[in-house]
Amino acid sequence: MALRYALMAALHEAPATGYELTQRFRSRLANVWNASHQQVYRELGRLLEQNKLLVETVEQSDRPDKKRYHLTLSGRKDLQEWLSKPQSRPPVRDPLLVKLFAGDLLSSDALKRDLEKTKQDWLAQLGYFRSIEHTYFRQPENLSRHYRLQYMALRHGVTQITAGLEWIKELEATLADLDKTP
Amino acid sequence: MALRYALMAALHEAPATGYELTQRFRSRLANVWNASHQQVYRELGRLLEQNKLLVETVEQSDRPDKKRYHLTLSGRKDLQEWLSKPQSRPPVRDPLLVKLFAGDLLSSDALKRDLEKTKQDWLAQLGYFRSIEHTYFRQPENLSRHYRLQYMALRHGVTQITAGLEWIKELEATLADLDKTP
DNA sequence: CCTTACATGTAACAAGTTACATGATTAG
DNA sequence: CTAATCATGTAACTTGTTACATGTAAGG
Image (tube, rainbow over all chains, first blue to last red; front, top):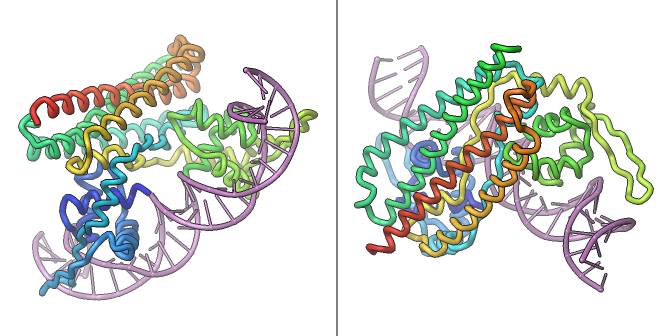
């Protein structure tokens, strides 16, 4: 049920096309919520049917027309109501940890490859977060409440990834220790 | 696709009934993978059909009979093959962060309630992890490779939650600051 | 010519959630 | 009597993934 609210939250910030929303989920919302373009278009269709959105067709001379979606009053009310209800933590589902759990069937080489890839992914993410921090949230104390809260969502990503990278170091040290005395 | 491998990893450790597997997902695997009993039974049925598992019916005098599932050779091979293939990071989908993103529609009171609940959940989890650490992983350096890797899966949970609790403090401080100068 | 970005979808399937359903035993 | 634990499922629905499908324009 949360996808629709993630979409509505994105549209509350600014009206957008399905394409733009997909991009937002991949970039600025990467640490918040994820959705593929197929999910976005399907859900936009449903929200439109229920009058939570309005479409504005934007004609373009050089490219195919695009549809810009706007949140309606009814949509904003739904979102606001959802925001006021308590949410529980998303359950953990991490394939890398499943691998560690079945440790005796897992080769150290395969594990090291996964670790290296994970590290690269995280470093790239972290670099991206830092660039956003730098361009949008220079002096957090001086920002409006709205942006300070958005900044804290970003901080969540930064702190989780930082802790994740520390954990990888610990795991790599464990592997090195195991290699030493097999 | 990963649910089946999480199940097989659990069964590789020790044969179990659907009920026991559900419990493991809720307790010892809480920081690794999550699955409801409905998912467990459905997937056990599928794995059985494909000869990845064997059933042993355990007759009980006082309670209804139970079915204990064992991983077959074919199942273990599948698992091993999956373990050797690289996995990507699970995408982030966190309703609490969606709320922060829509900060201007979110009341501070509602947010504080969510934060308090999250904190309680995390503290309970952390306490549970620490108890496992204490009873199963006393001197990690002396454990076998298998258990050291399992221990590192547990450490992941501990470090993520610890970072999460720090983040909540930061967010609470932000809210206090906003209350001071509205 | 080829790839990337723009732009929008459908179909099939796997995974996850919520609700419903049944029945025994044990502890309070 | 009532709730919790043990034990196993079905049905309906929502979400998420993968593959397929189509077409324009810009840049190298």
